[in-house]
Amino acid sequence: MGKTVFVTGGTGYIGRPLVETLVARKHAVVALARAGSEDRVAAGATAVIGDALDAASFAYSIPRAATVVHLVGTPHPNPSKTAEFERVDLASIQATATAAMNTGAAHIVYVSVARPAPLMRSYIAARERGEAAVLATGIPATFVRPWYVLGPGHYWPVALQPLYALARLFPPTREQAIRLGLVKLDEIVAALVSAVETPPGEGPRIFDVPAIARSRL
Image (cartoon, rainbow, N blue to C red; front, top):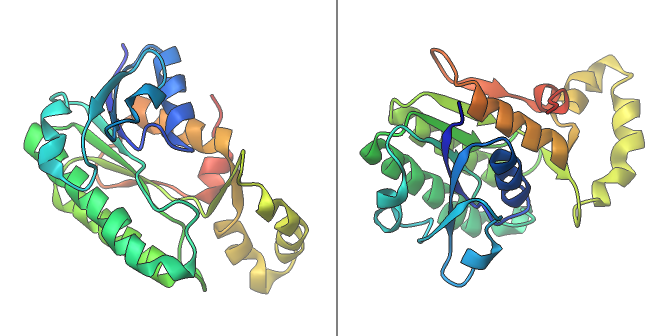
């Protein structure tokens, strides 16, 4: 049977193809959108207008026992955006966690980030605190932890693939190269669909980079 799924960031880079895929797989999808962006929600999903930073603006739209998928974040994150990681990334998952708890959600799927890593420490710190906010709800949770997702408009790291391949050959750098590897847009969408369709047991379930890269629909 199809799941009832509430998606934040459903009109974004990962969100739109995810919503399209969930709808195609016969899930009932409700997608949160900013005012004026509701026409960007994929056909077949129900668009609701709200502010991802304000739980009260969208909590009423989360169906009871729904799976909540949180995708809101700062576009093209880089070390200069520390303030945005606090204002947007962290604040939005805290709002989503609060709304999910207050409406009786059954499962939270949160796109976090791979770690540890030598770069992007403020981004990682915000996502770690986001995971803590999800765990504090007591709702079963799945954390999907990519490093960089290749896809339309996000192809520049392709040039780094030879370096990744070289790093995987040497024991001192192999583990980090694997942990912080690149994944494709269709792979993370497949991982998220898998997370939605197979809720976790006890404790948080984690899709790390290798698990995401193995994901297929």
